[in-house]
Image (cartoon, rainbow, N blue to C red; front, side, top):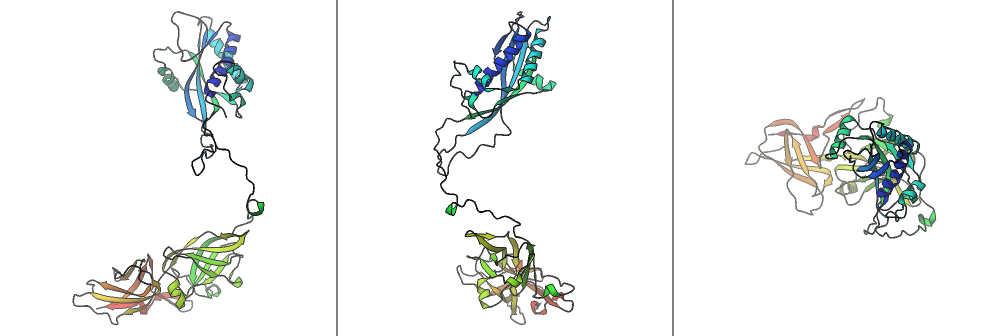
Length: 427
């Protein structure tokens, strides 16, 4: 790192190298720093070194570490990394080719001397205005690289020098120059302990367990040949067949639902786990009707802890469909306004924060509103406004975007068919 005098130090050190090369070709040649300017009528031999562009270094511009702590205190000084672009113009007697001779000597020496050494920088600093520069102590040395310019780029460059005629010239880039801020920083105290008991970072090596997909079916489906089709969604009472990698050490399946305050968990018996498949039966008892909720859940697998730290696999989305238990009244009837009221009993129970709708014969009917903070209910009321008459219309219940499955699986091999208990006749 270096202070704000770094740019001037590079110009001074590079000027010494360029001047020394020009003198070897044309004795008595002078060095000038600043924009190229030709002295009319004077054939004096002279080299102009001009810094015409400063750009952020593409490699180190994002390498700066965080400079402030969470409370805003400076813990590391911000550092700017820059590339300096120079144009070196040569003036002299064109009859004796002095500009070309000096150009050749400068290119020769900069190709051989492509790094500004610490001695070069100290010589450029001297004892004058740059005496406080610390660039010579920087870790990164400044490297010199020729930058070829197209005719268009060269024309644009010289057009910047207003009323200055083009001269024999060459461009170089000096990289990289790092300038450190002078803001005071708070020292960072050394780390005394690395983790509990100074055991360092806990590293778990080897292939990590991962989930790939999940299927819903009935217990024993894995033993049937041919394998029966899986259910479109999961529902209480079905068995989940979880596929993945390295699942032999799985302990429990965790389900996280946005409507529930705490995750649900199902322990995995050792016999239900293998290296690539887990079988988990979803509960369907009275307690599950209150504890579970239909909708989209995040499913992951709990793994044995390491050094007291909990571990889990990646999470997969799981759609838990509601189940229609009863549709009433039987038969459906229209009220005085020609509308058809419907009452649906379902499981699991629906919370007041959940969105519920009835899908029947092209109608999507929202559930009747309930009071805030009302307890979960298994009974939902709907009013179908002026429906057309229909026979054997399939009924589905949609809760938080997941539809119930009006299906029944029967036969050998088992196939899906529509469940007559989930069909109604609209009068």
